[in-house]
Image (cartoon, rainbow, N blue to C red; front, side, top):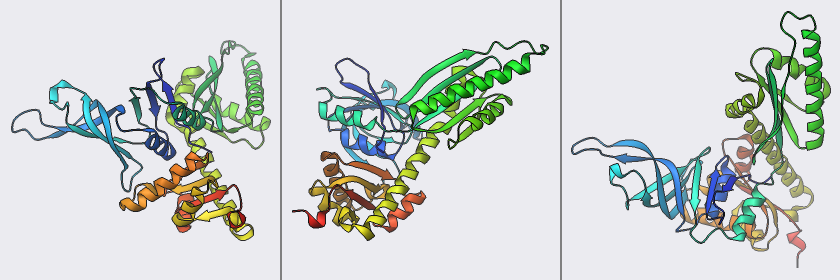
Length: 360
């Protein structure tokens, strides 16, 4: 799977691009897309003094800088973007001074490019958004039900229904509630069958109604995990609340880690059976990247933030070459089981399109 950078152009001429960083792959993609001279606007912190003799303090603010230099910060999953301040609060007299914006997971940026974004970069953005995997979210209470599909690219609202149940004293209330839950479960089952790439279902809401629907869903859907989440209400507002609590994005991250584990297993199998279809370590991967042979690469995030500039730039050059030949790249966090395995295998693995041992 590729990164799925959340992005949108906010002007008709496609000069201003808004992005949200969700994982380390997104940081790498942003790092390769940014150019010197781009203008980046983001929320950041700046060390300032407000008066003569006062101690300096860090103040949160929104700044726009002209990009001059970028680097991955050692030992962290952060991208540092450095340049001159073009726009910011007048109070602190910082216009024209240098500032570094540290970009972390969850951050949003606005990137302005005076000459507009070229078709090559736009194609890479579009390609990044084709990542598969979705989570169905349903939020319900006794008044309404909301159903949506969550992907890295965003949320698609499917339906919002008023339940219109009889009053609490009505003898038909429980019968109609059970029928309503059964109909909701049937609809969600149909959505899951239609979407084909559903990795889980999140059922949210106040009280015990969500447990009843989850139980109903498990009888309809075999092999699809159903998770219960709290929300203060049903309907689409409850769906948004469930998203903010983080379970849907957590499920997609878990799916990606499982896919990476499979790729590592595939690499080890190829080493024994068809060694010409896999390369391990910086030197081997550099050679096969030059040949345009790489189908997919796994790169440990620590290789992009190591302090040895020469080693870091060599890994970056490998990734640039893989990108240019249409290969896929996963940046793997070191603090995961998959990352630990990748570290023991040299920090970088490439699965190849053809047998390099027999290529002419």
